[in-house]
Image (cartoon, rainbow, N blue to C red; front, top):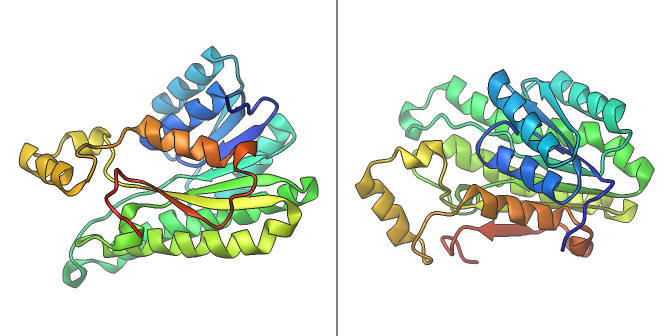
Length: 249
């Protein structure tokens, strides 16, 4: 069983969906967790209560990950609360879907700033305490769209592909300091958003996925927890597809 007792983790975008599942999975394995959220204070408070019910500490920090100062504030708050940062999970992400010829400049920038630049800012902010400790686990949540592309999601696909490149570059930079950096690439996952899709669309997704179903947020979280653990100490610079076989390479 994975044991994260005594570890401190940061999760960006931790109040809902996959992020919430990651926060709870880390806490379930013994970690204290700080997480960022952008605006839903009620959802953030519910996650804090759920973590505390597991016997761990939780810290909810409001901020927009697309702003560099937000990452610095999140790291400072985590160090103030726990004194260390062992794990960083870059999960925060948004979509602004449209075809390229109709996509606005703002839609492009918003998605890239949040999904890619936000991860860079968080990694940069967390790097110094990890280097001082000569240990750390960084896990970036990419997407099957970042590995294969997705029509109508040029901004999202580009940002998630960029996240894979960022993962590999960071892995090479910090390996000598005992820090690993990996990515998970989810496929179609059951969330509030996907559960509202029309049944013909859902059926098309299931048909395109070799395992014939959607993933769950818990399955994504389990993969993240593994990459954040000591059991994954010899894995770095890798992309773990958690997508039911949607993308094979």
